Image 1 (cartoon, helix red, strand yellow):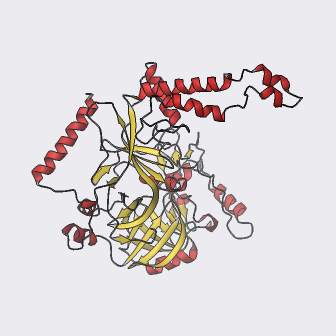
Image 2: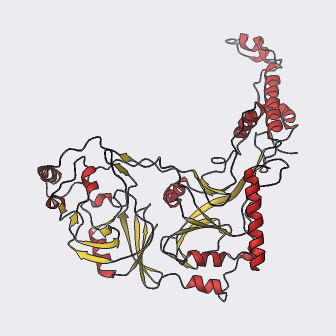
Image 3: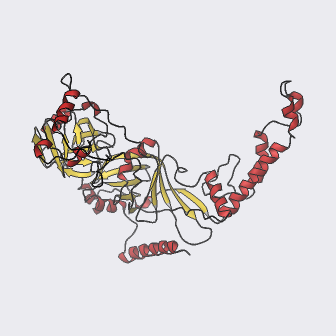
Length: 232
Length: 257
């Protein structure tokens, strides 16, 4: 058994033992959310019943992204004990890494020239020939990603994508490539267990990418919010 | 074992059938090139040679062989290393919003009462709400997400913060003292003289401070409202800004996401 699987098995055992010692019954998603709602920060809730990714603060749903499906994908290493079955009860995971920042526009002037006050006045005059300001044409930002995967403090990653195949090697061709690499002795890259949130609209994935950042709590298997805000 | 079907799909459990490739060889025959034994007789006079040159069994046999090889590769290699997937659902027995439960009571105490401001930074919308009723909805602009790198020195990321904040100050006719990044962005060195940093017009008629230098303020460029173009502040149009400034008091909670 690999070290990673040992760690997973140990984590599962410790969690079960801790729950048993504490005399806890089934995990209560509302109790988990009540703890998260005490802080000033946002938190995300994956609701399996409504199939939504809910953006919340203080128990209030600020917005929700409709999901086509929520799928757990994992690698089963034939016969070896170990990871993992999909999470079957509510859990709070914390994101430990942000999606790559390649979508951000970078402005990096090579040299800075001394500031001259007259320039500003000249620009103002040029910008306002008829007395009204002319809006600059901002450089359009690069498109935000519509598929990404982030690590969490659990053994599971969270991915957001328009299809499961986009983030997991489930497609037929990707399986063949993976199989071929294994046949010729090139180790196929291990696939981390991933909870894939399949969005209905790729734009939904783009508009929430900035919320998948380190320390963001994600309540997996939460309940509908007790209150709704206008954006939701 | 099911697995690889005639359309090349794999079942959800990720299993691939050992014999499926052989079975599928026949289906390829059906969709392959129609170069059967009688082909030369039915083709038109312009291209007779093409049909005669290719033995009729070659195409389906090649396709069948290729499919069988692929199936064997997949079946053999994936046998001990399978990617599985399952629909995710939590145990419904644990789900209950019974208002009598302690956890539910604690959670219900959290949402703020009274006036709140909610801002969707990605879509550029602002809502002013009281007790579930939307008093005002407005287009706004939030942070562009741009990264500004000073030559050999500092880095700024123009994101709007998220989470809960409060209005900590309200100002009429706000003056902006331009920070260093405003000059670096223009390719100039930040001036020593503070008077060169003073800007009386860019913030509009009103500003509401959310702390840490972030403001809700006006803009000279109202045509850009709704687009993520700011350095982290929230820009509003003149009328919406005036309404918000008059309605919102110091201490009002603002939720940004």
